[in-house]
Amino acid sequence: MSTSGKVIKCKAAVVWGLKQPFSIEEVEVAPPKAYEVRVKILATGICRTDNNATIGAMPAKFPVILGHEATGIIESIGEGVTTLKPGDKVIPLPVPQCGFCPGCISPHSNYCEKIDIIGRGVLADGTSRFTCKGKPVYHFMNTSTFTEYTVVEECAVVKIDAAAPPEKVCLFGCAFSTGYGAAINTAKVTPGSTCAVFGLGGVGLSIIIGCKVAGASRIIAIDINPRKFEKAKAVGATECINPKDYTKPISEVLKEKTGNSVEYTFEAIGHLDTMIDALASCHKNYGTSVVVGDPPSSTMLTYDPMLLFTGRTWKGCIFGGWKTRNDLPKLVSDFMAKKFDLDQLITHVLPFNKIKDGFSLLNKGESIRTVLTF
Ligand code: APR
Ligand code: ZN
Ligand code: ZN
Image (cartoon, rainbow, N blue to C red; front, side, top):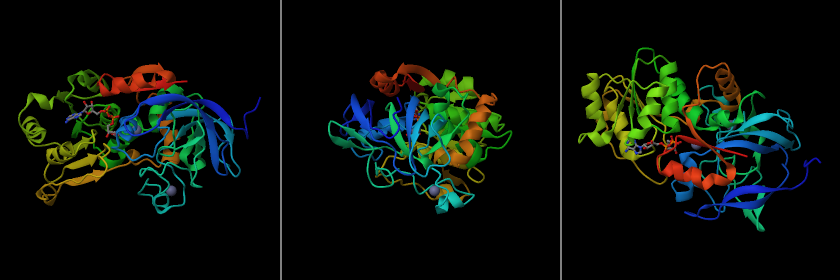
């Protein structure tokens, strides 16, 4: 029986308020309005950003359905949708590509104005498509994937190869694209260069993969959790450093180890002190440092301007600089052609109703990516 045009009742993980747990509830998912699509989620990854939203370090309105890294199938489409049809395999896009805003028109930008990083929590018409126990439930980052069904705008979802394995390519919805693109598009890592990556979660490991594909000859991986080192080496790190083994800043340690020759550094933790130390770690004149980790909301950085005056470049990127609707299908094709492997990044696969276990693995530092399947 077709569900098109009808409200779907399904399971979703609702977070009712700040610092509240994920609660599996029955929710109602309204049909898509004009220029929207309803997506049946097949697999979704657990990202640090979702955790940040539960603790107030990333803006969100409550109650909310979090989750933003997923693969799904189009269940139905709203009026006016022309680029997608029911049955298409898709990735929802936390960074949309509307095609019309200044960021989309510029060939140098992927920052679509439709992005929701301020926690609007609603679709274009200002309303939500989710209700639970008679209350509206907010969306998150244009996607909301911790649910059996979600509704997203046409510009916030892209069709991918129907043969792509959902429990792997969901990582293109955030971690992999963000990290890999930071190395390839933002830093533009050059062959033979020396790189240093701070933070070895799903994002940091994806940066290492990008540095390796770009031909870096030395990739130094840094984490306070030495259990991350094995994976870092498996994806291409040439050496690993634990800041806890040193009393001096890592920038000093790197200068000594490399004879002051680190060209590219990446911060994939989201801490202010490591953002500055990553900047100080690249060469004072020709070095480039990229902020990849989400900066904690409502915070300010204080740093010595001499770090920049001597010639360093300090950059940031959102979603690895990819123009999402144009570029993700190509990234998925590269994956299908075995240009890179995601297996090292996926440490756990759990059924959706074990979402709390997935977050506890993340917070105990035991997982890289946990993928929830439906
Ligand atoms: N120095 C070095 N490593 C650190 C430090 C520190 N001071 N503090 C934490 N780490 C390490 C953690 O041990 C962990 O391995 O940083 C890593 C971060 O990995 P995850 O928590 O798995 O985060 P990930 O999903 O990779 O995201 C990284 O990008 O998308 C954003 O919000 C996300 O800001 C986060 C960042
Ligand atoms: Zn746009
Ligand atoms: Zn993410």
